[in-house]
Length: 115
Image (cartoon, rainbow, N blue to C red):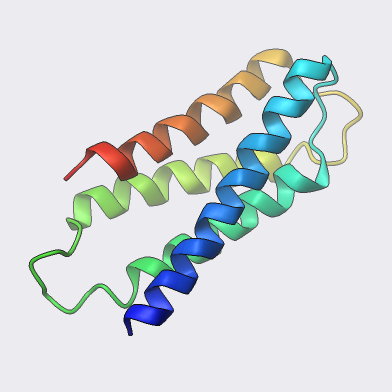
């Protein structure tokens, strides 16, 4: 079970890298467009995050709180919606892009600092 958790965690981190890396790259270039890396990163983050939380529902001491998982799920769904809806537009509003980056970083901060 631990091997599965580590594989899912690795996939989750790859999704985070795609999402944040793709968004920051687009932001720095000045072209505010949803690229495939951002879209796939948000999909991978959402799917692997749900998969990561499912096996943890066994009642152990190291288990994250349901409130933390709910907050992370809310952020992940918001990020996915913010990425999925405007994915075919040529340009996305700069504030919208900053919102995607901010929510991604806040979601990672919740994962790291909320114990």
